[in-house]
Every structure is written in structure tokens, then in C-alpha cells.
Length: 403
Image (cartoon, rainbow, N blue to C red; front, side, top):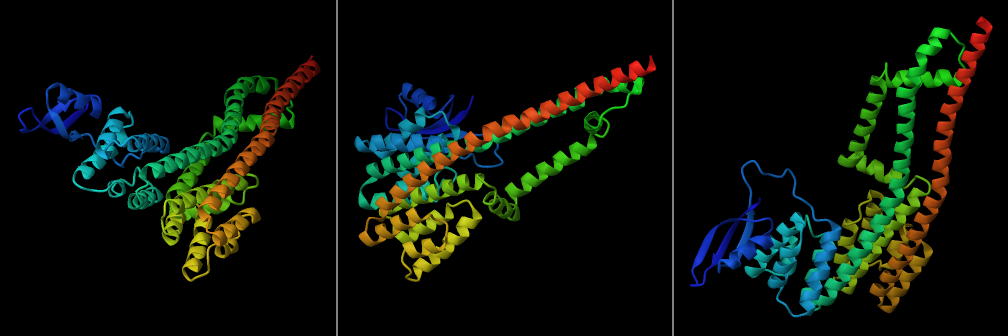
């Protein structure tokens, strides 16, 4: 059971410090209140052997729920510290709970909500903090939190759609490879002694499958080395700077998938930039934060060029149009928004346009890919079946000739 250090005030107004054990921060707080102690500070204490190699990141879904709940409390007029304490007590996410605990402490010490959030990059993206800062200046914190929660909800849904579309082919391919491995590594070797004993002349398909069987049994080190190379290659693309650049460029060249990735990035760009502009963040700052939040190096570099051109007085729509990243409809929306002063509304419309187009592309992708995968797996299983049947006929023919 976790151990919590606390600082509290008893019924006589005396400061008390100590430790208590509880499952969550909320349980620890309730336990102290039962003892007529008003908690001022509660934080989890870790033993010498309890440490983390990396800071736990707060999931986007948890951040969305936190933002939605905080917006409701702020609209109801409840002070931020009390609202966040209630949310922290009720949440079951450990990372978010720790973040809220730290933020409450900062707020009690006179800090601002955006300032407290900026100390927790594992939970709050840069655009989130920028929007909070502008909302505090304008006094529209409740409406801004609602907008942020709506954006986060759409981002979670979009990411779920993209992951679902891209994970399906991977699962099918893994199942197909597993089927081949079982047939070649276990089923075929059972027939190999029979073929050798009868000295039958085997067809090419059977000889090919027997060679694959030898790869998985006798020469197992070859597929094992190949798999290690694949894992190393994937790790290189994920961890190293050059690998990430290669991955980002490669993804944008793969047919069908490139369209899904492009529209997912553009939808996120428009949503974030629109939310920041609507919250009153200056356009140069909003553009810089949104560009930094773009996780594809190709898009990031072109947007950096557009941002530099904007700072030189090139406007907003023209530099973005020169990047050749946005379709004609979006470029027209940017132009109208810039000329009429409704850029935030036009960016929101553009985000909705990209979201609908993204959903359409994902549906087309899955509709096209499902029959292709079925045919692919069918060809593999069919090839194995034909090879086995041909081998059995070859064995029977050999037996007849011997008789």
C-alpha cells in the first residue's frame, strides 16, 4: 500500500506532520479528515528501491476528462484548488494524480494555473499551456477549458481512427506469418521422414516449403537474425534522429497510408491553431507552438519556413499556400479568414473538413485492404495445401512404380 507524507492542521490550529498509508491520495485525505486533521499538503513517499526511469506521461484521454471536469467546477464558481483536489481524489490514473497534487501546491503558493501546468510537460502540451495563459488574461477560463476539452476529445477520436486503420493490416500480416511459421516449422517436418524414406520425387512447391521448414528448424539462426535486424531497424526509426527523419519521409511516400497520415497531421494543425487563436494567443506565438507540436519532420520544416515568411510580413494565407501542404479548399478558407478577421472560425471549419476527409480515407483504406488481406492469406494457405497434396500424389506414384 502506498505511503503518503502529509502536513495538516488539527482542531486546535496546530501544524502536524506525519505519514499515513492509503490506496490513493483521496483515501489518505479522507483518513486524515476522520482524525479531525485538515490536510494542507499530501504527497506520496517512495522507498529507496521505488524509482522510475522516466516520468510517467498523462494519457490524452485522462487529460480530456480532467479538463472537462475542471471546466464544470470553474463554471460553478468553485475555487481552483478545491476543484482540483476533488478531481485528484477521484481519478484513478497515478500520473494525473501526481500532476494535480503538484499543481495544487503551486496554486496554494500563489501561482497561476498556466504556470503550475507549465511545470508538468509530461501532462500538458505547449499549446495547452499557451491557451490557459491567454484565458487567464481574458477571464474566459471556463469557456476556454470547454474548448480545450472538446479539442482533446476530437484528437483522441482521430488518433483512435488512425491507429485502428493502421493496426489492422499489421495484425493480419502477423497472423499470416504465424500460420506459415506453424505449417513450415511443425506440420511439414512431420512429413519429411516419410518423403525421404520413400525417396519420392517431390514437386517444386513441396521442396520450397521443406526449405522454409529447414529455415525455421535446422537453420533457425537465419530467420532469428532477420527478426533481430527488423527490430533494430524499427528501434532506429523510433529512437534516433536520422531514423525519425527517414520514417517521416517514408510514411508520406506509401500509397493510401500517406493520405491518412497527411490529413491526420493537417486536422491536428488546424484544430490546435484555431483553438489558440480563439483563446486570444497572438498569431506568431500560436503558429510557433502549433508548428512545434507537429510530429512529422517534413511538415514541421515547411511550416517553419512559412512561419519565418509570416514574421517578415508575408501574411498568413500565402506562406501556408506556398508550403503545398494544404489542399485548395483549405487555402481558400485561410484566405477568407485572414481578409475578414474570422481566422479562428475558418480554422475550425478547416479542421472539420480534414476530419471528415480523414474518416472517409480511413473507410476507403479498410474497405480496400480487407479483401486484399483475405486473398493474401488464402493464397498462402492454398499454396501450402497444394504443396502437401502434390507431395502425397508424388509419394503414391513412387509406391506404385516400386510395386
